[in-house]
Image (tube, rainbow, N blue to C red; front, side, top):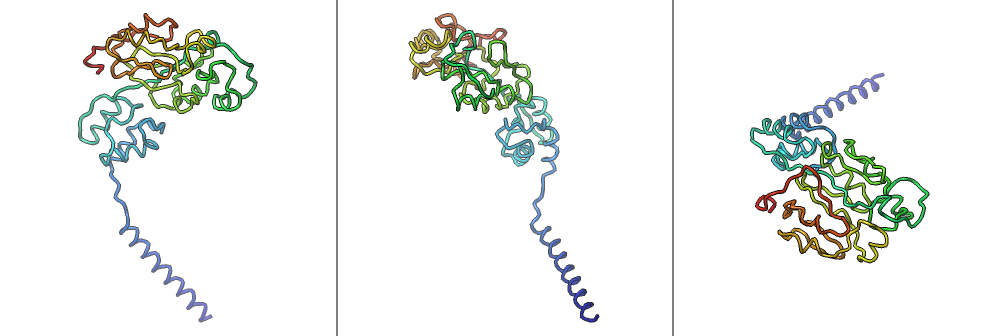
Length: 275
């Protein structure tokens, strides 16, 4: 009996000592949290999309509170969220540059030839690996709609021609569709730019004509016509330097394949602003 009491007392004493030690250690090694982090996280949209370059809203909030990220670092929240965070941080802010997704392919079911009949999962990554889809163009949109499924904001849909369409009013520039596309035909571009070369094929012009009615044939007419040298042709494909583009639409007028598209409602940009 005596031995049992001694054992119990010893265990109890050891427990007290360990508890005290844990309390002391917790205080010694505690990391002080910035209360602004909690406030910033509350102000953020909470979608954890990663468009800011951080793992999630919490990580961004911590980075902003510590001065490692700007107050307008959330492209999804836009100006309204940036202003809330600026108030928390005691600073001022400007509207973050808004980017939207652009699909650089016009070769839908009507324009692009089929080389085979695909019979498998309607998933672009699977289609690209197993059979490469059913289109003869090996650079264009596979039409599986994986990008649409990846969009967390319902800002995309598949049209009747088998191509994804971006609803720019809903697009937050989170980049999920860009990550989902195995052929890299979706990019993020400043919403003010309304001229796009909707082709990603690097095949020679002759081969492009054989498989698609609207593919780039690298004729260089757009490159020669551009007054601000915003278009260059390399590796059989014309590409736009959006930092230089003024949306003048002169390239659209001379493109023989109608590969270059101008969006309605987007005005010309003064050259000094475009860069």
